[in-house]
Image 1: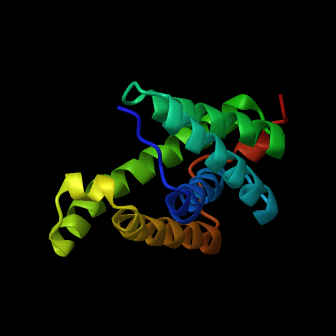
Image 2 (image 1 turned 30 degrees about the vertical axis):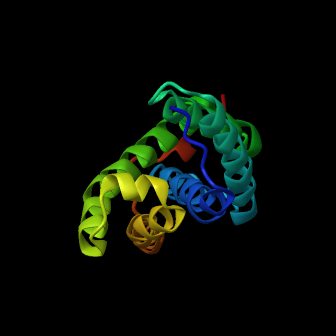
Length: 159
């Protein structure tokens, strides 16, 4: 089944989600990125993700391809090693997935809608993404304020 995301979901969910994944993922490894670079990667990723979801019919493959696209974009636009891009994005994707698996069921239950209704209504997709965006924003600001990171990848030279 092909799952084409509406443009409004692309603009208000996919692109912001990519932005948060990039910002938190890099911050966890003490790698700074300019907001403009993160926005550029997020927008290009959003467009690529739109076409991946439109034309890839095998469930789950679109997620793997989207992760690969985000890693490659980050590598070439930020000019960091492939390994740094991979570890940052994979960990941040995992964190986002955990947050979504916790918050989305609560949002659906609170709104009294089924998973089927959710998957067909762009407004619900956007609303359900808000708690994850809030959590990722809080994590980013905590990491930034405390200067906490899991591992300092800046100590190594670019490959």
